[in-house]
Length: 276
Image (tube, rainbow, N blue to C red; front, side, top):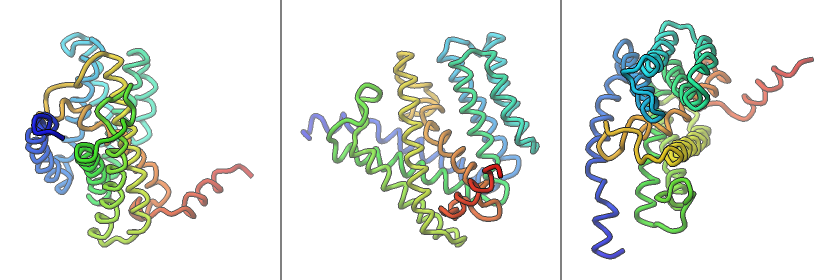
């Protein structure tokens, strides 16, 4: 890498790091404190992502349709916050009134918000695990891609992403998963490595999916709220996929942290669900 190219490659690192620090402090306080602060943070995030989505699909928030779309996401989050967990399905299905593209994005937002509220019920560790793994995946992918470079991962979808970055993100997610499990003292460090990898891959899939959506719409970022990151959809594109995956796994081991679920637990649930 030449001296002329190096500043260009790293030009967005400073605002990216600074905004990430602010998000970590705010999110960390809300996740750790739980209660109203955490619920409000999730609701604001759901409303913010819905706002960006409506604007991306040319539905201004000030219009009745755009405003209703944002309200839809917030009401779905409020429903989950009050313990009506199964209602998210109704909110997802009925969102079809906004058309297929907006309905698809709404389903992702609702499932992510519901999952984050669900995972915070017993303690902050499950949420911290998911968030830390997603952040580790994103950061490791960014650093590995910048330092190593190499062949592109999906040039037609996201020209900036490399295979080395994807590999680095996976390794970072695996290590972070094991680290959080050890730090929590709740056991399951071995299986946590596996679930860290699964969530890391899920986060990368979410990242690529959001990139594909933006490319189809002809936009670079979903918004400008977060310097160095773009909008909320840009920042949380991995989390909105990883959180529902973690929530689904938590149903397999309802009395233990989700990362302790092993293959035998998954097989037991599958067998129990087979008729006869």
